[in-house]
Length: 462
Image 1: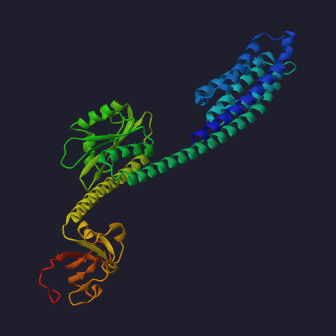
Image 2 (image 1 turned 135 degrees about the horizontal axis):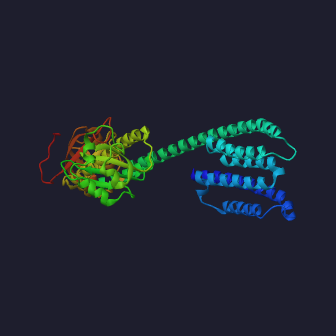
Image 3 (image 1 turned 90 degrees about the horizontal axis):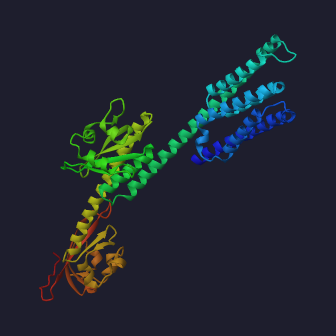
């Protein structure tokens, strides 16, 4: 976006330089014969030399300072001054010079404002009228006045039309560029939030909140942002700030007992600190506006306030408050997802640790009697490898196993006393339901207890 704007400005500058160069060549060519004859003093050549040098300086100037309205206005004034001097010394080419200068002024004011175009016309027209009414050789005052009455209105209409068209075209282009920049910024901000929610679930809350502050700066096009937060049953505020937010200011604000960040916890929507109601926090950052909105993590009870600061000058937009609310909602969801992920990870680790430490052999099957999980006690019975065993059918894994009355293992749905050659012995097998493998169908848990060789046999399955 910025590169395209620079290209457009450079193209406008090249066109203006080219037209001014043609204007310089035209005046110089008209003035040269009279200067060689000695009828023109060195004043006009000196002015033309300065005019050429300014044009040359514009050609090598690379910054955007050239496009400021102050510089444009100074160039127009210098062009008009050059015209006045040229017409004072070359009276017979007065109308041609004024017409050329009028075109230069229109071109220079293109894309600015209608008042600039009309102002340039009025300045040139005033000089032209003054010179014309002074009288011309062979022309009466009434003839000069008739020329002005018929010519100047036409030029005024052209000036108004050109100024109006160029101003509206420039406004529409600026509006489109602003809308495109806003959309690009919002897309980048939302992409950043999505990446934040997907990639920071394992990080601590301070890191996640710091990333939220950075995302707020990008989404709202603000230079600084900070998140003040505290956990459940805590009194002191912590802070997570963007890169450009001063650390000492954040620490001082976090230590304030009556801080607006704490008050924002219980205020719905967005709170605003602006010059209309002066606040010390504005002066501390030399900011034009501060917006604060609350967000919360309902899983672990963390409460936070997002603060975004804009520099002077800043025009308040209602859309910024709406974007702040959406950002706070998304940030709250990100915090809750991160807390849920940590809670589930802790629960999973606790379950895994407990399952692995059970001394009795245990194997978990899905609804299709395929192995889902087995503890180390079960793996050591038959020297199984867990990686190759997962997904295998228990009937194939314990092939040859039978009940105490000689039936195959697959025909016994309840468990009981089993002879398992693969495990080199007899086992008391207890089966129970397991609902964690699938939503429908569930699975079963098998608990095996080895029966000593000298234990009495039973003819019936318990």
